[in-house]
Length: 393
Image (cartoon, rainbow, N blue to C red; front, side):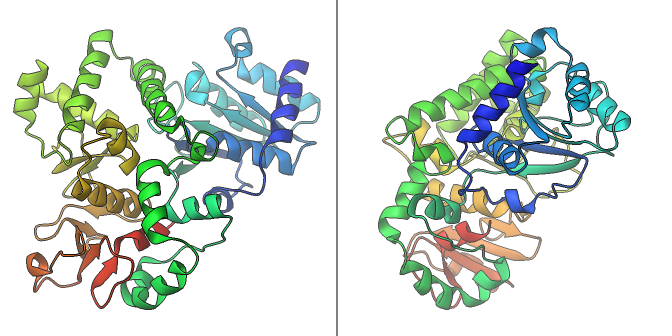
């Protein structure tokens, strides 16, 4: 027990408290049970430690992949710590702990005066496991750094988020002011290559090595045990990811994929769904409601532009990078679906065609509420700078 307390005190004392992810101030910390889900390396642990730092006397941070929990149940540990006066329990990596759902439900029901904040993989399904937490937990999803956050973290800025409506109507006046505080040509390209994860700050030279390691860990340590995949299925999943990475954006022919992978069609669709939930892929669908994994996505993208540079360091397609950036940034806060006319539809209302400086509006001519999102520093009328969509969160 003393080991856990000492470890919590040490880690929370070392955390950087000034640089906070966008989600920190959106979380209602007074809720009794909070689940924070997201991809590895996005900053979930830091958020927990920052909260522990804010109230050190009653809070304790514990990682449930610690060897301690190989021989100790969480519910017994919390009971003992409760008697010592602890009331805020910050639990990391809950998906690595076998009894996570049952113990969280039991603690929630037994102790009305404690608060629990737990982090887990983005694939975590709170209706799975030994207890359904869907009626008890407040759930938050943490995305990678937006372009806005990247600039704030790297340059010490305090840029505020922009509403989509403001970008659409006032981009021509907003963009010039923002361009005064950063170098568009340098910073935007750097972000697209190696700025999506907060660890760019301390691992600039080894960024892609760490990026590759996180994908491997997500597949082997998060997806495989949680989804209870057999070794052969995990191998197929990795092969599927490689096939897609060679030709993104990928318009899937599921039957051909099934033949190429020598895997049943429904298994291919299930693996695509898992990779989407795990935030390794982005699946563009015709609708965001009533989705079953058995419904084929219209297009498949790697989840963020940094992944494109990882898989294709010398042959990255600029058009793919631009579309991936738009889809990635906008879908974090809005519903993005496929469009019959442009590249994307947002909130079932706005149509966007993404491209370079020379892109014309020919493809969306006459389409209501249609815009061009172009790789340009400043725009005019319905030609909007692509990078501005990185200011949404």
